[in-house]
Each structure stands twice: as structure tokens, then as C-alpha cells.
Length: 398
Image 1 (cartoon, rainbow, N blue to C red):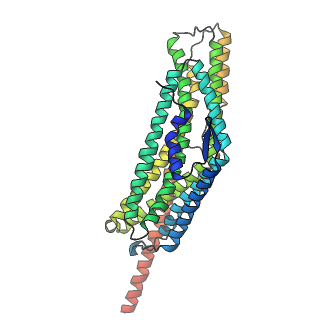
Image 2 (image 1 turned 90 degrees about the vertical axis):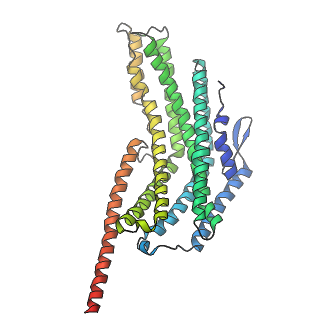
Image 3 (image 1 turned 90 degrees about the horizontal axis):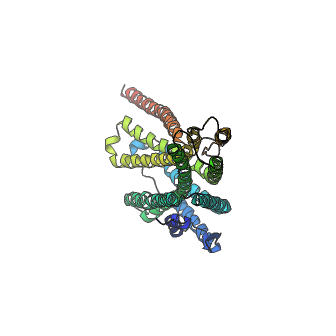
């Protein structure tokens, strides 16, 4: 099986970025360099997107249904959704150029890890890992990003009475570009996760193939080398996290606000008895909520899987059986486990909270609390308004 290069793994993401005008690099002798022309192209693309967004929301009239006229959050969500996408996209594009050296350094360090693994005879495992990563990248770009976002954008644009093309660009372009940037992050951490899996596989091989006790002549050197590779991968993972954690914070925050807002409108329509009158609108909102939940779930899953595979290594090391008479080997394993305990991997958003499966439960709890409070306040005001109207009509009748 052919061992794919990093360029081949990222080819679909880079091609999409070039089409969208958000790729500001050129490759010279296999090394990425900033391109002035592509930087200008990226600046023009982002500027046009911001200009079209401003034009659309300043020249469009929102024809809200009478029943939803009381829900002031609708206007906020319409504007916030577009502004948040454009803002995060601009931040990601800027960050891509500012942190270009850090990204290149992380890929170079990962390549050095690959060279060590090749010396250990892991060429077949590396080849399979790279192919799995490339297949995941193709699926995320072609199916999840381009196909679904394009279909969604077209369907939304067709429901508009005017400015359909402008609306399609305002809604679809930032979403595709933003998802493409996130795909780059997912591919990078997936590559690191595969390397952790190879290391754990080597340890498992020693556990299962050594019988009751390890009989390797160079056991201590082999364990030290695996721990060194693990330490390098943890450092690479933390570096990748630092590159993306500001935009990850904004991305997760924006998705949470939009999720709560859309769920609020759905629940308001359900409890107010307007659900059957505006089925198309509710279906669109349900689709939006599904998209936000999917984004948050996959973001948490990728980060959680990476941390699980990295922090699992020390547990596997503890499973190696060492002859009590071999003090050097025993001390090597104990020292290695202690090093890994103090080098725990945790993906965070600006170190404010960890991005893992527990984050999903926190988001569900917070969203439920906000929803109940908002619904109680809004429905209470509607009931008070109806009581006041009935009292006025009764007074006028008397």
C-alpha cells in the first residue's frame, strides 16, 4: 500500500480553499510559502462577503408572521447567524496566515515522528492510517461540507421572494469556508490520533506476544523510544490546539447561541399553538438545530478520541508484565508511566473549558435552563397581554 504524503492527504481541503479564495499559500520545493497574490484574493473574498452581508441585512425587510411578532429574538438570530459566520471566517483566515509558521512547524515535527515509526517497521500501519485520514477528509469535504451546505443554501434561497443570489452567497459561502477550515483541524488531530494508535498497538503487541514476562533484549530502549514519540505527539497536539483554540471558542459559542435561539422559537410555536400554521419554518429551524448539534458533537468527538488515545498509553504500559528480578526494566516502566501521567493531553478552548464528550452534557443542561427561563418570561408576558386586552374589552362593553 502506498504511503501518502501530507500534500495528498490535504489535497481536497486545499483545492476547496483555492476555489473559495481563502488559500493564501503556494508550494515551492514541497514547502508552503505565503503568496501575495493569494493573500490579496483572500482579502477580496472576505471583504466582498462582508459587504454583501451588510447590504442584504440593511436593504431587506423581514416579513414576520403576526404570531411571531412578539418574539424579538428572531431579528437577532437572523443577523447574528450571518455576522457570526462572517466574523469567525475572517478570524480563521487571518489566523491561518498569522500561524502559518506554527502550522508548518507542527507538520515538520509530525513528519519526524513518522520517520521514527518507519525505522520501527511501521510502514504498513502508517500507510493505512494515512489512507483512512484521506478518506475521512474526502467524506467531510465532498459530502458533509459541499453537498449538504450547497443543498441547504439552494433550498433556503428558493424560499426568498427577492435577492435570492445575494442571500445564497451570504448564507452558503461563509458556511462552506468555515466548515473547510474546521476540516483542516479535524484532519490534523486525526493524523496525530492515528500515530498514538500505532504506539499503543506496539505496546499491545509486546503485552500479547511476550508471554508472561517481557523477554526483549533492548526492552528499556524500546520503551524509552515509544515514550519519546508519545511526548512529541502530545507537544504537537498542544501546538495544534493553540493554533485553533480561539476560533474554537467563538465557533462553539456561536453554535450554542444559535441552538438556544432556534429551539426557543420552536418551543414557543409549539406551546403557543402556532406550530401547524408554520410547518415549513419549523422544519427549517429543526434542520438548523440538527446542524448545530452535529457540529458540536463531531468537534467534541474528535477531540475526545484524540485525548482518549493519548492518555490510554500509560494504562497499556501498566499492563506489561515484568519479572520481579529485572529491576531496570521495572523502573523503566514505572518512570515512563509517571512521565505520561504528568504529560496528560487535554484539548481546550482558550483553556476556559475542555472540548470533550462532557461538554455536550454541559451544553444540553445550559440550553435547557435558558429555554425554560425564556419561555416562562415570554409566555407569561403574552398571557398578561391577553388578560389586559380582555379586561379593556370588558370595561368598554360595560
